[in-house]
Amino acid sequence: MQLKFYKYQGTGNDFVIIDNFQGGVELSKEQIAHLCDRKFGVGADGLMFLEKSNKYDFVMKYYNADGNLGSMCGNGGRCIVKFAKDIDLIGDHAMFLAFDGVHEASIDKDGIVSLEMNDVNDVNQIDKSTCELNTGSPHFVSFVSDVSSLDVYKSGREIRYNDTYAKDGINVNFVTVDGNQLKIRTYERGVENETLSCGTGVTAAALSAFNLGLIKSSPINVSSMGGVLSVSFDYAENKFINVVLSGPAQKSFEGIINL
Image (cartoon, rainbow, N blue to C red):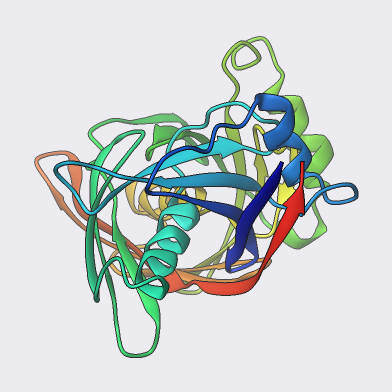
């Protein structure tokens, strides 16, 4: 089987995208994991199908690098919007259906893709430096003094597989406040390793920083290993609304692979 694929990245968070708008492409868990494998496949943090919707511009179907169906991916959402524009499916605006519901997005003249995330009604403050929340995917956010010196793989894996989270898994973010912005590193479930960037993790970090009183206003710039993203929001009636994740999304290459 020959498969046409596209490779996109958003601040180093990279994805294989399959244009399945006309249908006909079905992949097994093993095939998806193979495509995401960095030594034997294309290599990616996840894989997305762009599929047809009768109501919206398209459907985004996201799979983790292990081949399992994933939840919402913020950088993936921004990348698939850029892909949809590149293939002339949309203009500078999109409305699409993802795992956690309907999202709107826009692309400005500089190529910055801004993605509206879901409202966040519940931030579980575990202690003065730790929060747990869902920004389309579940996230554990821990504020530390120096994220650059941390063993993210070891520390993140310990939390992701502890008795509380092992069954369903959780993404683990370590964050340092640097003036009026944040520095973040993330261990992602499904990838089971540190990634250069995580859109829903960046969003979770920004909302957690505001919730804990560590940063007082929006938007918040968040620096990941792969680049800088921005999170804007309003806070009203004890919930975060109008949450928008913004940053670059670019095509890396395209090709055909034999499966």
